[in-house]
Amino acid sequence: MSRTDAEDVINPITFRGALSAEAGVGTLGSRFARVEFRAPGLVDGWRFRGYLGAERQGRFAYYGLGGDIEHHGSAADPNASVYRVHRTRYLGQVEATRRISGGFRVALAASLDHSEFNRLRDTSLFASERGAGVRRTNLVVRPALIFDTRDLEFTPGNGLLLEAGAGVGTAREQAPTDDQRLYAFGYLHLRGFVSPREGTVIAGRILARQMEDAAPFSARFGLSGWERDFSFAGADGHRSFPAGALAGTGVQLVSLEIRHDLLNAGDLGAVTVVGFSDYAHVEDNSARFRVATDRWGGGAGVALRVLRSAIVSINFAGGANGFNFSMGSGWAF
Image 1 (tube, rainbow, N blue to C red):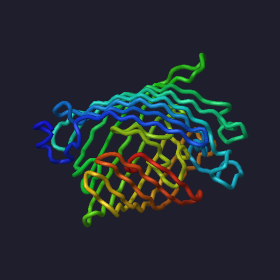
Image 2 (image 1 turned 90 degrees about the vertical axis):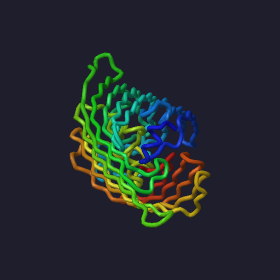
Image 3 (image 1 turned 60 degrees about the vertical axis):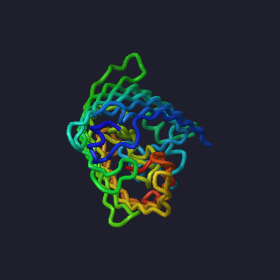
Image 4 (image 1 turned 45 degrees about the vertical axis):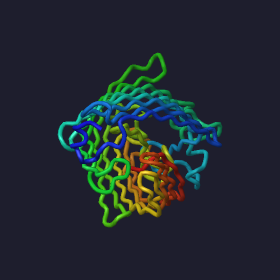
């Protein structure tokens, strides 16, 4: 640890640098491979991150832009094939963060994302709205201002993490007649943590993201934030929805959860139970039905931490669209 980082007692770094790789295969045609380099302490006052990933999701959810299933089709089951699509994604990201003073930091990131959406063989909502498929290559540059007062980064018990960012992107559809388009976006992401007693943490999140209507289809499903890329639905977002179910140019997401350690072995690991409630408001001017989605949901889960940063979260949630199970490689926020 450098002298400067040692003096910065707010959110002290837990490692100087790390290279990680993971891969997996699912039973419904899904597979992924990822490589990530994180260096929060190799250079005094700087943090660096690089990421390469490829994934195919055989049952990616699609409830239409705006995400309101009540206005689409007649299927009673939100997990029916009519609300599913194949998504293949290749993503590369680089980011550099400079500490200004105390908890203040400024970050600059660039990402290149190539996404392909293809309908299932059966009739689906995606096919009726988008045809056989959509392909987009999206280049994004995003600066952000960070304010971080968390006591520990990998298991925060007290403090705030505020992220305010804006950026521009350029997207091109894989068709020779399609022009390249520029679009702008901005977002605010606030996360807070308080520990009323040892082993228990109350955590909350407020997120607002707005994009121009020129934003590509593939960019409306999630946010590439500071050192993290996540979807608005699923393990990192609204846990009562499967990944992909919420998509729009205007998204507000609110989450509240309680984390309690059943077993805590310090830096060796922990088993934590989680109770949570999520709310989302989603709208999109390009939606077939311009009706905003407002959805509450909640549930419980368990998080398994190995050593100081490897976390697997398992969530069981319910809401207006029924039961949803999700797994994530980290805290929801």
